[in-house]
Length: 483
RNA sequence: GGGGGCGUAGCUCAGUCGGUAGAGCAACGGCCUUUUAAGCCGUAGGUCGAAGGUUCGAUCCCUUCCGCCCUCACCA
Image (tube, rainbow, N blue to C red):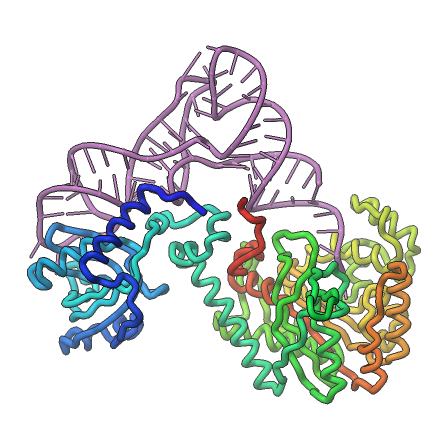
């Protein structure tokens, strides 16, 4: 990859010296007596008792003073200073210490004390090299700023920038909370196929792959929906799945080709119930993370306390578009799109026009948490028709800070109606689209009334970590290969 | 895919109105037994993203390409 520079050669030289002393620079294990957390929490007691402490970590700074040295070790999130004196460890041990570099992993044994300036410090009595580092780490106080490097070599970003570490710790905490929330509610966590012979549950281009033994094209899933509903048919009343979905579409601030989605389905519930569940789940998350239902995203102050605003697609366009889509003709909608600078030449049908108008006129306005409800049926083939409003389905999308965070329906469970919707969709796309007969067959056996929800986990993490781009909440975001 | 911006040492950044480049940290050598952005003295480190073009001369100007960022388009 990169050429060997003088910097790497210097470290190689030290590695050779260490080896020639009969020391294994990559030993197999190391027994520790304390964690960094324990040392920091119980420092006064441990130092008063003059207890011997054994720690291991990565060397992240080194300050030599002739026959004595200071350094810091880190466990990835905390750091502890160590101090070593030649007159205490002897000349040969000290000269080995001088062969260490920032980046090396080290095990140290000694007692704790405070320096003149009061910093908790371990005085080294013995140490062991645990892994020799052959490349220099990024600079110590500017960190690693170059975005490309931060994404491509995330491990360096994590070492150099504590904020990055904090974002990904929070991501883990978010998923942990949601899982525990749903488990307590009585949901079953399940796993469904990523490799699928047919794809569905959303309208996106799929990634293709090929199975050699079956000599068959398979698709990476674009949604979990159709398999999770089969499980509702199968008698699981409440299920959820955290999974990667894959969409072969453009990439931007809020889209990565592979992304994490939480989907859940609850029998005997409708979209109203799911709205309440969503409110409870996300405010619970906010309380868990911040002890508050208030948060700030990119300078916008958000209040998550329920109930959240619920506004229908029709009312929202009346409010922000000045048009009543209940009365407007397709031509009038097209005209309004035109006046908003939307190119409608490739768009057909009222549903898609309405969707464009929502994108342009409504969604950016939805800063405070809002359920946008009751979508046109043409763009919602898996949602049940509204019980009282014609032409509309029982569906909501959740927006916070203009981010589309969730999508939910009262799930369509009428197999005959579902078949019609699939057929209409296939007709619109011209023949090629295959209908998922097994899914229809499952519905024909009978699916209870069900509410379902999908939550974009990456975007949720963006919201709670105040990150502007989805790449900042995905450990290894998609990038073009370097060469 | 369109538009805009960026790419200089390992890292963070200067700079050259066209005369082939500098700083801090990191590295290397020396001095230094409570430092913490340690300090002091010295040394080394660069095909200035790549390839062409204009020019006596290009890191700088032009073209193309590569990569990243922003934005628009695409994406139920």
